[in-house]
Length: 239
Image 1 (spheres, rainbow, N blue to C red):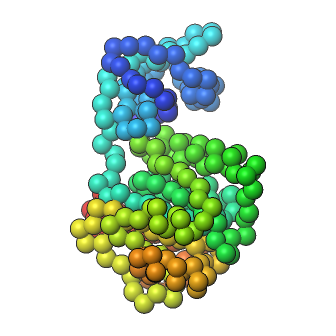
Image 2: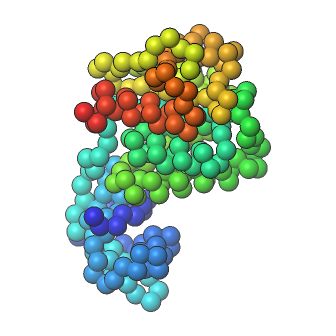
């Protein structure tokens, strides 16, 4: 498979564009690509361009051969409301959720979140989160970059991100879930210690069904990913 690079622009067939510094450096210095090598550019909005790279001393150009919409998006729209966890765990969740086709990721602090973010750190972290998702799209052949947001209140996150089906994952729940023919689903996942009883009650009050994933207690970095995989197998593109 040809290397993939994210470039935020409108691609035109039979045109040439100068690659931005980041993908140009990655192509020439990291991947050691050569003159005339093939690559794929994607715009983050669902379109990709087949191109040939040309290397010069002061720039790298992409000769665009064709442009087409990507066909790697799931018909199922999924939102993951993930409670704030350590950066290492969150990077893993963001990367793997992107690979599993998540449409939107909302990071929110919870009562039991160990990690805390102030306004100064948040701006840097949000940029890091978006870069993680972008890199995951390059690797997994997605051309539509999932939306990544931070919301400072769980209640607001739950209200603003409702789907056709809305589920809060809770080990004490009495049943798993079956999505049937649903076209969209939102999962809410707690931090390392799980959501508190009050937070689960809040979610239930707002229309979120409590659900569990089998008889074992899953870590926060496993639970959301397992839920996404089950959802894709039930009514997404894992069928």
